[in-house]
Image (cartoon, rainbow, N blue to C red; front, side):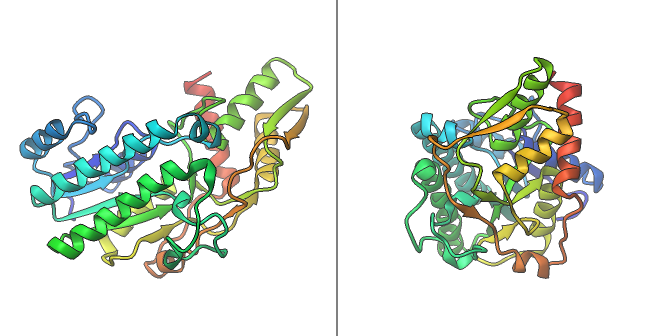
Length: 309
C-alpha cells in the first residue's frame, strides 16, 4: 500500500472508519475512495458489487457493521447479528471477486470466551462459551473471522483480521441506552452536571475490567497492520492494561466536573468479567499507543461539548 493506492474504508459512517480516513489523510494517502456521501449500502449485495466495479479499490479496511453496548446487545440481538453478517459477506466476497490486493477485517474482543484466560491470546478463540449478553453479535463477528480465513485457504486471498480493544473517541455514539460505556457515561455525567443532580446510576456493579483504546490510536494501528501483518491468525489491537468500570466512571466524572455520587445498580448484568488483550504480536510490529485513557477521554469530552451539546 503506497500513497497512490486506491483505498476503500468500508464503514466511513462509523467513528472508527472516520478515524482511519483521518489517519490516511495525515499520512499522505491521496486515493481514499470511500466517503459518507458515496459509500454504497453495504447490506445490498448488488450495490456493493457495483461500487467495487466502479471504484476498483486495491486495499480495503472493513470496519462497518452495527455495534452497541450491553443494553443495545440485549435489546437488538437480531439486528446486530444480521447487519454484521450481511456486511462482512458482501464486502469480503466483493473484495475477492474484484481482485483486492489486501483486506483488513476488524472483528471484536467480544469474540473471546466469557471465561477466557487473561490477557486473551488470539489462540483462545473458540475455546469456550461466549458471554450471553453479546453472543449473537460475537457469533457474527466470529463468522467474519472465519470467512476471511476461508478465503485465504481456498483462494489465497491476502485477507487479515484484527481484534480491537474497547474503543472510544471523536464521532462516537453518546446515546445513554444503546451506546458503548464511554459514550453513555459521558452523556449521563454531563447531563447530571447540567441539571445539578446529586447522583448518577450506572448499570452493573462497576467491577468488570475493560481495556480502552482511543480511536486515533486504533486507526494508526490498523494502518500499521495493513502494512506489516500477513498471518492467517487474527492480531489483537490494544494499548495494554485495563481498568474497572468504576475506575473509568471516576475518571470521566472528574473530566466532566460532576460533583455528585456514582451509584452502581448491581441488579443489572455486568457482561464479561474481564477483557484484556494479549498484544505481544502487535508490539513486535513496532506499535505503541500515543494516548493514555485520560488523554483520550479529555479529547473525547471536548469534542462532545463542541459538537453534540
